[in-house]
Length: 245
Image 1: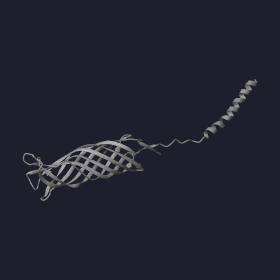
Image 2: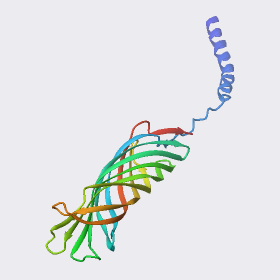
Image 3: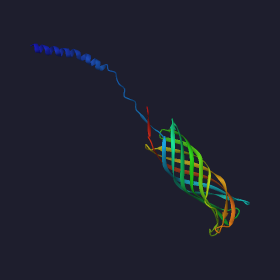
Image 4: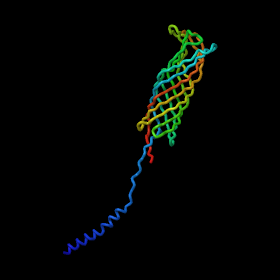
């Protein structure tokens, strides 16, 4: 009997204590779940890439002592690569880049001074050394660029009838300036694609032409500008994202 009374008293005591325990549990403060973390692309880092596209070189020839011989566009394809570094501060992105391309821009026109001859220009390579300023909207980057440019060129004069070589210069490298703009999209943590336009302002140069036998043929002052449109693929080294709450 005593054992029964002891068990009964214990059950009553537990029953009385249960509401208090429940009250304590109900009174515990609610802990809010942490906010979502947004991944923001970071453009900072070294990158290397490839590019390809189309170019057009505008060339105006003036025969010294006679006058303008006319102009022509030397057009064709190009392929090359680029390497650079970017640094992001807020939404602004700053960078430097070196680009080198093979090219096959060619064109010609009949001389206005001597219609028996055709003037021909070929651009077989170019390089760009530029600084960049861009504005980033997460993984989309808009930028402008500017700096130095160099082109590798060859010039020749052919007979209109038969096409035989009449006059030629040695291969020429000329320096100038460039400005451009581009749009780039990061489609994976370290990969991005883009499109870019560049205009090259090249210095005027004067060339002495010689015949295939080495005799003097004539002297021309040649002006040159180049327009480029290229698609680009870049791989960036380093961390691709930063956390933002």
